[in-house]
Length: 547
Image 1 (cartoon, rainbow, N blue to C red):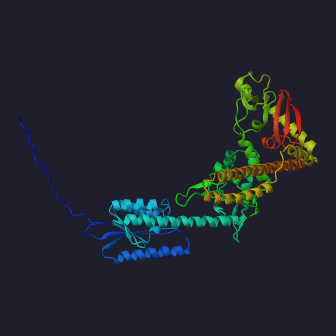
Image 2: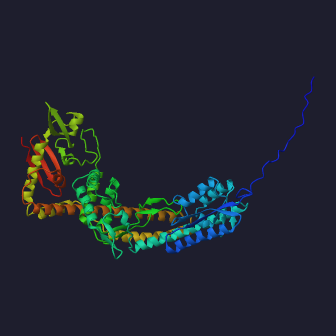
């Protein structure tokens, strides 16, 4: 039987044929050394430091015979908590990756980065490529073995310092807001500029654009229509751009700055590292400053716009088993799309084009009849558009004739009728006083809970206080909304009364703008009769649709 002979295992060491390069650069040649400088603001003092840093590093690198200058990279007016906007810093790192830099000099860790994670990631990446960073203040060379621990330690200190500064700045801003100091971003606010005294002043030509936007919205125009009109007329935005967006138009319509007031702390930054900006939905205190600067738009008009926005947003399309079809998305194209409804089933009417024998005819038909036939709505008539317009025109003239001279009295009565059905009034001052008392009590309870964490009674009391505070905040918000709605309705009633008094002659042509502004609803009773209800009054007029 054959025996397997086990051979002896041998290990050979193959010596290196090239000499290892010295850390921080190739041996036998001068190191390519770059410097990084940064200042966080554009103040004169900081800019002096910025210039001094550049001069210092240029001289220092030039005086060392073993070094050659690979560039001075400097960011000014830039935060150190993020690398997103540090253009020069990113250029320097890109040069390192291309092998053009062997060593980086910088004043301190806080100049390099105030974010611990960013500092470690960048330094580790550079060290993996044989590139060192020397932090002069901390006396750290990242190519040494002890640098990782020291770097983590000092980077944490730098980040903590940044967070402390951020908290102090936030506190200062909050106190400034509470004192009523209002910041203005003139480049983003159409209609205002900084005056000679440093206070906001109205720019007349821009103010006319703002007023135009408000008027057109109340005339029934959609945001898209207003946008198209402004672009067609070549009207520039606050930034000088001739292209408008829906959001810019909406911001103008909802910005309280245009009535001379200012709501502060609408948004807030979550922390100094991520710099995430969030909408303030009760998370932080807010301050409302009244009569801070000259108004462009009357408060009455501002509240009218809010009321109209709420009305448009509340429209929902619902298909019910009864066959009643409610209008969905707001339509600004035709006034009757919003106003004309079927007297039989309550569904809106829709504009249709009929074409017979080469002739076109514009008619309005019940949406329920169009979608379901006679299944739910049996007798709703088809209405000719021209005849409808004429009947509405006759109704408007009758309304003007009846209301001329007594418009204000009629509308005052209508206002009292609308307010008569309101729920029990609650005094906002009483609610705010209770809210302040709850806040004080909550702080006291919180101190006791921290001393006795296992006390269920204290925890229950604290929870009950928080729930009551939330309830009061909700009631205050509802009261504010009701007040704005009442203000908007009152303004419209007054506007309607003034309009009635101004009309000296009868209308000769139908206009969507007038109909949309002063008519609340038009009900089709039958093929020959419509009922017109006017806004902010109890007045209804039946008019014949003439053949």
